[in-house]
Image (cartoon, rainbow, N blue to C red; front, side, top):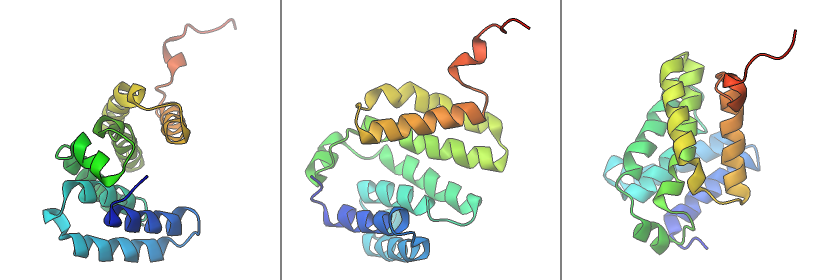
Length: 163
């Protein structure tokens, strides 16, 4: 169970966006939290989680990309011990698939398919670290959707069927 007050506040913003359809209110809350944590100078866990959530409420894909890249940069400074201390049930390795999927989507939207495919490959390489729970299924579903959009699905190497 999450015990970190900042992560809980970020969760309130996620709730506003995903479950209440209040994207602007979520963005405002995230901006307030960003100031409270000290922005780029804050705790890497807070930066990672907040940037990951903030990316989802951006109207411009370039801004979304900036936040997603911030989240990816910060995760490298997060430890499993820090996650456990915050009450987060995932390991650091379990954060990477979602971060790479978001970057895949940004680069796809921007038309940079080479970078999109690179992040898709990275997400694919890390996906086995997720459990068979709601979160793992959500990320796997996103991976499958993006694989199809980028023509990278499992069936891409299958020989053509009969005419």
